[in-house]
Image (cartoon, rainbow, N blue to C red; front, top):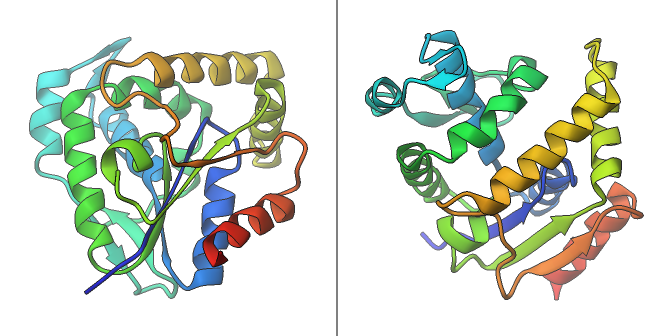
Length: 223
């Protein structure tokens, strides 16, 4: 079965997830949230004592991770991704998880496992995938590629507003530091660093609304 892959890469809080969901819905594709996958692994590591203090127990995590898998479910209505048969929500979106995601994502065995899972899931139907290396590593031959950027302070404000709306007590300066640190970690890691694919369409979302960026992306796909 011929399937279509749309890759949406870029920095944290540039609107990748929101826009990817909009594209998937408009095109009747499946949205695959790769950030969710890395957050799920981070949550898994934190809640199973595979992170102790400031140290990731890498060997133990590699063994445990090899026995995990992601899958699709339509039992609760719209298709959603499960990790080891369970759906996760806001528990993956905390600042504590955010502070570990980039470090977890730097581990070669984590990336290898999740890239394999992403490729398996994409074979079941056309997908819109967002992440850091979808268009460069996971699907270098993706049918469409986008790369989103935005000013760090604007991205931090978006994340700050999101966490406050959920009732979390956070400081803007703390969020901004997390954004800047993640940018550095994502861009300089040795394995699959964040970079724009040569043929990707770059969009700066700093001054555009979600609707405006969505229309730009749809015009590329339709063309």
